[in-house]
Amino acid sequence: MADSAPIPVDSLNPPALTATPTAPPRAASKTPAPAAPPAVQREQREKKDSLKKRESNANTNSNGTYTSSASNLGKRKANSHDAYPSPQRFNVPPPRAQDFEAPKEDIMISHEPYPFDMPEGDRQLYKPIDLAENKRGYRYGRAIADPLFPHKQFYRSTSPPPHYARLSFEDADKWMHYTTNALITTNEKGWRMVRSNVCAREGTLYYEIKVHRGVPSSGPQAEVPGPQPHVRFGFARREAPLDAPVGFDGYSYGMTDIRFDTMHRSRPGKLFHPAKRGKSKPKAALGTGAGPIPIQLQPQDQHVKEGDVIGLEIQLPSLTLHQKVVSGVYNPAVDIGDGFDHPAYAADPAGAETVADVIRDRIPVAYKGNSYFEILDLVSSKPMEVYADRQTNLSNLTNNLTNQATTSKDVVKTAPNSNHEHPSLRTLPHSAVRVYKNGQLLGTAFENLLAFLPPASAPSKINGAREGFDDGMVGYFPAISCFWGGIAEVNFGDRKDGGFWCPPAHIQRAHGRQGDDVQMADAHGNGVSEGHAKVWQPGRLARGFGERYREQVAEDVVYDLIDEVDFFMVDDGVVPIAESAGGAVGGKGRVKEEE
Image (cartoon, rainbow, N blue to C red; front, side, top):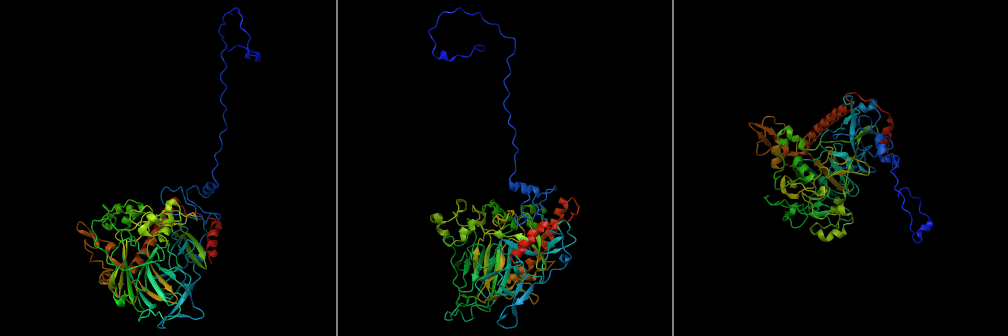
């Protein structure tokens, strides 16, 4: 009962009950019962952001544009406030007066104590100095301040002379030497590599090399003691190490001078003739089991000797098809062609959206009196390292899964193919590398090359780089490796004294049509017919890398203009006031660390 008194302790053992008179019922109380006490309300705790988030918010201005500081400049925090892909903009000091001057020519010094001379003795090879070399996950390209680009902090791309397709001084090992025209290279130590300043991204491109010092014309000299000079050549991506030969890992495809072997993942192979394509399922990459029958070379072709001219031709599908492969939506039953019949290659603006945007995250830095763009370079992925490991047997991956010393998500369960679970191990249909000697086709060296567009290629996560963006220079670069004094010369088809040395017939025809504004390619080959008009597109036209260099320069100009317009829109048309130089200290110091 509500009004009864508390029960005493003695009532726990009550005595025997006795008869008592019944009490009359009490009337209900008119006083309302007290309301239940309210529940205790705890004070709402303030949610605090993590240290990383506070640092990120502190370096984002009111327009949503990321600005760097000296403490996190090297980490390159991503701008998460952009509604569309846009380049990052960093806090750098205003350009100096000398930054507006034309880029200085590279300084080259003679080898000491004895100079490097060509076998003919008419030319000397030098070593470039005072360069910001590509290494340790960073890549550098020349920059210049231009008053026409105030919204992108005045800096745009440029290049010192010579202005043609050549070997890159920055994208090479520091022990490489060159002639002044940057077309001949050598090295006095072990295997070292140099890449060119132009890359292949789609279509068919061709270049030649000539061996000046290597295997003698009489053949290998096994009786001579000590190491002998050698050269290797082929194609390499940006992830390929510069202190190793072409074909050392999965990021490069090379040819050897001894035995004229193909080289990929440090595993030799032989040239072959590809089988005719049918409606069957596309093959996986070479070296994954039973493949084409190798070619038996003639005795005079079994080695690359001094004086030989070797032509290398790389064929790649269109970027539209390439994007399907790396995105995981490639269907071999539907995507039958090489992608050059897509409307994007018929000058249809509506089809251009199928190719990803080019986003370049670059910071201008000063080094040795020159201005450079510093870029976080691409690095090797875990699946690719497993793929290139010597213990990985692609023909028996099921039994070797326990030997792969890596995490479960990076285990390689199948050989590279166009629909592989790892983007870095997806292959490109309609891709190949063909080899010519003195103008004659010897055979195909590789088929189904590995894809390179992001996410197949990715920068270092440790440095805080943004992933998934193509900076326009991702592809396969012509590459030369030299060993112990081997000397090789490259020819990209744009020499002043003529074109290629020994071009195949189809390269000669293509070279003869360059600059022709009247005769267009037919609809079955190099053009796409739209009613009565024919739009020329070079997708299936075999061209020299020299022509690709001119396209690359035009692309750089267009990308710089697009970046300027993008930042113009971010700034609402107002030229930003130059910020303090505190954010540039980290960028400048990082380059000096490599000195």
